[in-house]
Length: 402
Image 1 (spheres, helix red, strand yellow):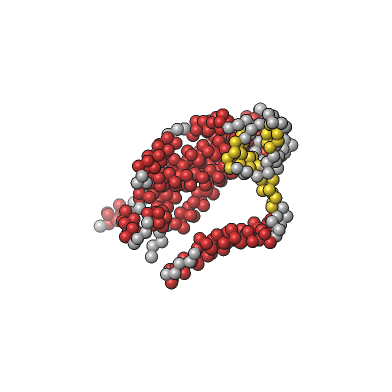
Image 2 (cartoon, rainbow, N blue to C red):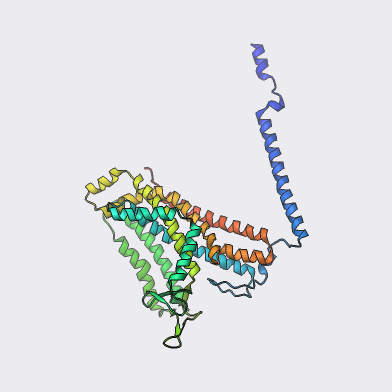
């Protein structure tokens, strides 16, 4: 008995103790990583000093000296590199935001069409998905850009897309530009209040229906809050909004000068081509996600809804889609992230996005490390914010256990 106790109480050599070996190995790894990181930083600083390139972000305050053909904020050649970088970031955000919305609508449409009982509609959707998903995005961007420039009139002419509202030629899509006047902030505030009131009304109507079984016209109430209330405020405040119309100048019956820059609003052909390519390409993947999500819903749910007398459209809208969203949202988030990052391919057709503007700044200043670091940080931030929002929405849509 004593011998067994002696054996169990015998000390294990330090080099055989798993805990000691784990601590030593992790300590060595941390030291190696710190040494490697310091070596990289030290060599980088040394190489920059040899090439007489100043490190840091002081160059962002220097005059840019180049123009940008699409700006959402005031910018000219006398503006700084920092302002130019902001302009490129805003162009990227605009393209990604509109692209995600349009790709979602088109993808949902094609996903539902693929499950249609109509043979022709289902085959059209299938062909669309297979073609768009299997052609490289960069090639699609170049094709759409070439088609846009070759099929529309030159700058001396225009093709009408929407009579009186939207025309297109090689310089872009021309449309009226709304210009807010003093007092318009009240209408904008009324719109935000209307959205908040509509959300509160929807929650109240849901609770009321659960308690009493009585339905409330939520759609009509939402329209009243979001559209009617701001419209009333807009009229009361004297309609503080001016519409600037594009001006098309003709100097004679056979000679046209075309639309005048600075009048109205124009969407550059590069932006239009990028938007079409990103939307059509991403929608092909979203369509498959939607189709898989709908098919993941038990067929018994559809049969039960049909037994209650609901029509196919109502079954899809009220029964199938709400349950399918729990399957659709996670992979849909990945497609939003892909679309945002794929927008960096805009440099191929000279759309002045974050990468294109940063590339010009890099070539002029030689601050490669700083520019690439800003690219990485900005795209990482956009991706994390998008993921956080979609994860929050996914949690809201999750099935609540009782």
